[in-house]
Every structure is written in structure tokens, then in C-alpha cells.
Image 1 (cartoon, rainbow, N blue to C red):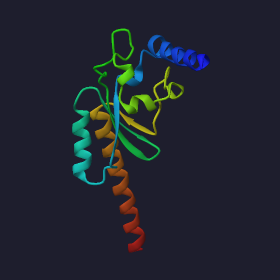
Image 2 (cartoon, rainbow, N blue to C red; image 1 turned 90 degrees about the horizontal axis):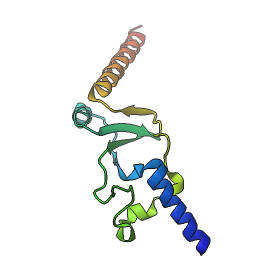
Image 3 (cartoon, rainbow, N blue to C red; image 1 turned 180 degrees about the vertical axis):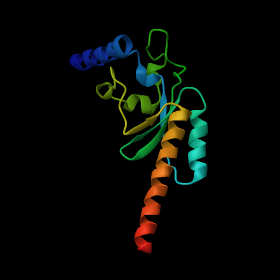
Length: 138
């Protein structure tokens, strides 16, 4: 039992001192993959706001909002640790992303980057469609 308490305390110290509780400084939500023009416009609008990223991980789309938890103390420790939400209790310190932010297959931190990617994607799609039309006409 003592070893388990020591491990938990070591994990809390690592969070506080090394990664500075990075997981308590943002939230991530799974979102539907954009399909229509409206969906893409909405994601572009999200990115027009500060501290927002959109990324794809394992073919699933996410929006990340970088905004610290209001219960994170100046010491980088949870001020409501004993009564913290279930999602916080389930988070394993072993899965901490410190010291490197994960690299996703696609990630957009700015509206301009997303709009540029979208324009390139749409142009490539139009080019493929033209190629198919030429084959059919031949």
C-alpha cells in the first residue's frame, strides 16, 4: 500500500514540477468529420478564435481549446483533487504527453493554415474529377 501511495505522490510531483500539469490546460472534443461547405466554414470560424486548434488523430477530428482549468492552482496542483471529476480521476499519469505535444496526421493552429489546406484539397479534388471526365469521354 505504501509503495502505491509513493507512486501516486511521485506522479503528482512529476505533473507539478516537470510538465506543469499540461493536461489541465486544455480540453479536447471529438467532432464530426466535415463533409459540407458549411462544416468547413464552421471549423474555419473556430480557428478565427484564440487558443483553438483542430486536429485529426486516427482518422477522427478533434477541436482543442487551450484554456486552463479553474481548479489548477499556482503550484500546478489540482485544488479539488479529492473531489475532482471522474474524467480527471481516470487520466493516467503514465499517458502524459510531456515533454512533447503529440504530432497528429493533420493539425491546424490558425485559420489561414486550415483555409490553405482546404483550398489545396479542393483543387486536387477538382483535378481528379477532370481526369475522370477525360477518361470517360475518351
